[in-house]
Length: 385
Image (cartoon, rainbow, N blue to C red; front, side):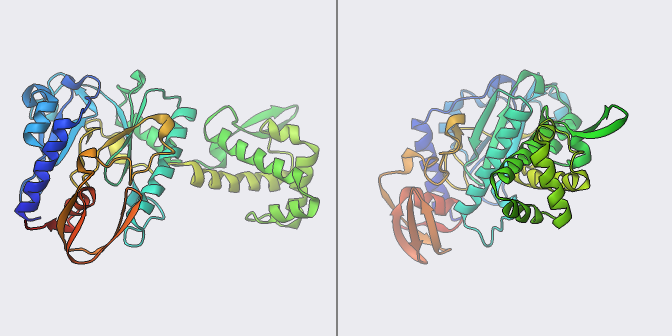
């Protein structure tokens, strides 16, 4: 990045912070703060700062106009201490991070930026469902990172004291690690015999049971041949097993509804096994483990600007997550309403604010939010005036 580009971005970031209202997280004085300035050479983070050292946050942002701003998930007695062991850890929020370019099935070389962010939002929705429906968390703040994905901050009082191992257990649950049929069933005595029963009262067992009952309802709505064809689509379920399963569903639906997977023999257990894998694949969330397990992690400040895109790190009300458009909603008003000339060094198509811009190499005039995006991502330099 050339100096004139860096100077331009620093100035416009300052203009943004002059008009923006950036809210602080709970207990801001107990958190460590860090930022990355607009410097030449290798990226260097300034950290081990307290608000006492930075000063009033809005003044700091206008004064330093940093490239990136972070605060700690942890709360400390002395957040400004230079050594982590000297800070006096009090507890930490539980933070989840979804990076769109690290998701299974996403190829940054093939998929466009918008496609990756769409995949990231699918993972976010799965994560929120797990956090709320399965784990019962209530104080969850959702944030678009301004760059590659999304963050979820859980601040329920009961999570603060969790150590790394307990946080890793939550990570494993959310990612569906180790979830198979054995893990979601229990054995019960029925007279003189034992029977295997899905754990339907919550967790992955309830999710698999719900999927299994949904299939049973679909089968009962079909004619026999269509139902058998549907069952034969599953791995290791042939003609004989399909007929046995269909008979069990038709004659003993109530037993299946109670979680009993003995009726129907090996066929229905095989079906439950296959569906367990499908449910885990469909409903788990591919979160970044180190972010959640690290009680000392710094995370982006909502309301600040992301120095790699020029987007605002955007808090999203829970009821607006599905409608949120990461290529429209995080564009700062500061960068809207006028055009800027840039020298494009990495030509291609950019889709922002509902428009598609095909950019050739060389000098072009584009809306400022497009120009800032290109410059921040290293795809353009500021045009010479």
